[in-house]
Image 1: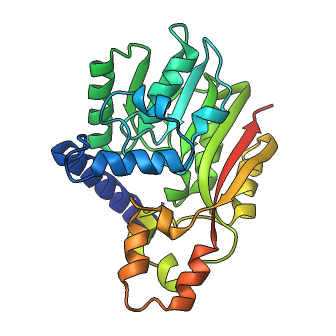
Image 2 (image 1 turned 180 degrees about the vertical axis):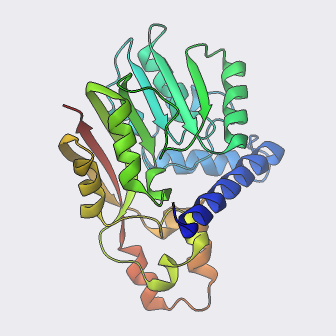
Length: 276
């Protein structure tokens, strides 16, 4: 991996480590600094129900997603599920409820602070069919052909090497296994000032690929039946927990025309693909 990619990954790791530390110091409580209430509002906007948000341990929902992959994953009793970029465990815990006692859910995240928080959440919630592994989604700490379903929520777009991510996903899935991801893609180019901002990268947008390129990476990895199940615009104002919103709103170099172009450049998509 080249120096620039390593720098981006390190910045992402540090940034998300700070997010979980800030959350643990103040924001699991809805009465404290609005953290949990903001997270709930974001999660509701992107497709989570009140029932789902109430069904996970406190502190598992950090409001970092852009969709609800579990809702469309058609998970079945007894399946093995892998969550790429599992964070504090929100989607892992929801998946565990769907696959039941005979199933298993593995969460992989490269941020030690997230793994620590997720593991503690699992302990508090008595989730004995889940585990969290420290690792990178470009080099998964998972065996070949052992997973039934892979889910991911607004994480792959953070990777500077998306091609390798999808190759790894293909490797660990069983034949017939399903890839179900929610992610942000570009439907046109972002303004240059945003695309080149490292902080914007950590906020998801500058690292996002063009939609056709993103789907192409999935196909090149070997997946078949690649299908966009849904697509919706994802305006900057909806990103209350996203660094990019701050970059866009407070950078004096960003012109009103750039702002307008940004608003219409980003889409949230849900994608299904199958390993034949």
